[in-house]
Amino acid sequence: MSEIAQQAEETVENIEVNVEGNMENIEKQLAELKSRIEVLDKKTTEPKVSMIVFSGDLDKVLASFIIATGSVAMGMEVVMFFTFWGTPVLRDKNKSVGGKDIMGKMFGTMLPKGTGAVKLSQMNMGGMGTAMMKSLMKKKNVATLEQMLEMAEELGVKIYVCEMSMDLMGFKREEMIDYNGLEFCGVAKFLEEANNSRIQLFI
Amino acid sequence: MPEEFTVEKVMDLKGLPCPMPVVKVSKGIKEVEVGQVIEAHSTDPGSLTDFPAWARTSGNEILKTEEGGDVIKFFIKRNV
Image 1 (tube, one colour):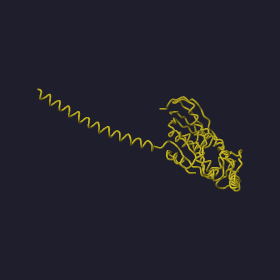
Image 2: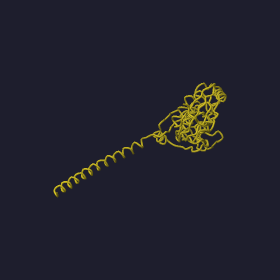
Image 3: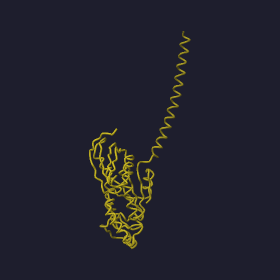
Image 4: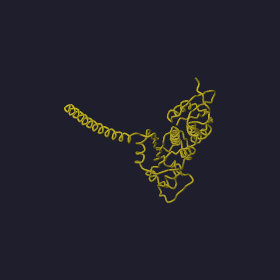
């Protein structure tokens, strides 16, 4: 009788050791899976659109804003980076600042001052084409660039302006438009946002 | 079997070109409760493909689309 009891006890002990060993294994695997998921989580992109607006052409900037406002409607977050020729589009036509050097003054005069002054990329014909397009847009009820910018602000589209372009063209922060949350940045900010976005566009 | 629903709000989007119909409808649908239905009238032919695309992406549901003359009527249920 006692022999049987002893055997039973040994068997139970064996089982316990086995279970413990298995549990350890499972816990190890679980920890590994958890760390893998953490890595993947960081790599998962958000429903976000990152856009570089490089162009300062009316048609291309308008297209950028149509995509931006449409994206918000689709439930996506939007970040726009204005750089190079896109930068002067965000100047405020009613603001002027002094203290610019000769190159800054030249760029300031030659580049469009704000959304109202940008031209078509094609068929501009000395401004005639742009004027015709604008009147056609009005007739067809297409929103103007000013209205699109307003809409974008209302919808919470985030706008960043390239600091280097500003500096290169001699623009000052004080002459840019009043836009809620407008910030100045460099390439790293764009790359961070683009890295977390499902859609990246260069316009 | 036709689905029964009550329209909570009607949106007039006639004459508006892209991207305004979806921009406005995405704002307008937030003014009703989840589960309620809005009716949107658009004259933009692009809406026929845009509204379903918007609904799929935003998680809402188009219950019915009516085309008659120039006006397209969408019946959209707010799901999110």
